[in-house]
Image 1: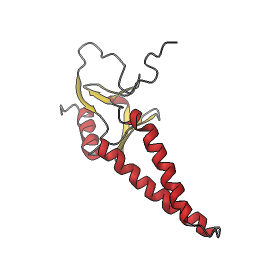
Image 2: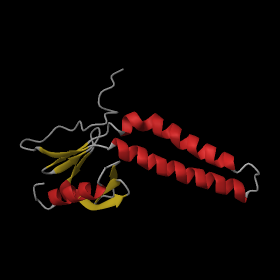
Image 3: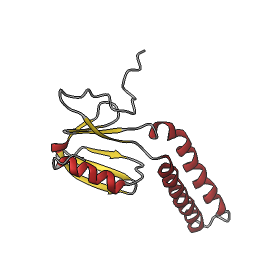
Image 4: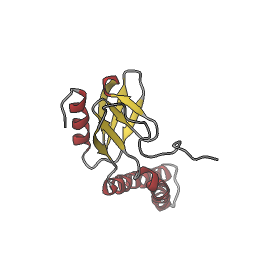
Length: 150
């Protein structure tokens, strides 16, 4: 069975004639682990709160469960998430695999923590995750959308 580009975490879409990559957005390892630490803290607090509300005398087990769940998730998906890359060209945003979003079709760019959400006029949504500076990532894409080189 051919593995091909189905699960590629980098862009596989060929560049158009004359199209050039202006910038690449890769996840930041420290941001990835920081975000997962915050998720673990939230999961621990929620787990403990649920057990307290239902009257369980072993409230501390909620913290253990929350931490374990997020830790397993973080370790399991780290290799894929940290390999993901988006390329910004002069006319498109090329994402993992064959994702390609023409800059003219981007309706909104939202900052969601360390991620930038791209929403197209057609309603498609994409995330550029674990950016060390998501404000700068968003600003670079906005500059490209207005035709400024950045």
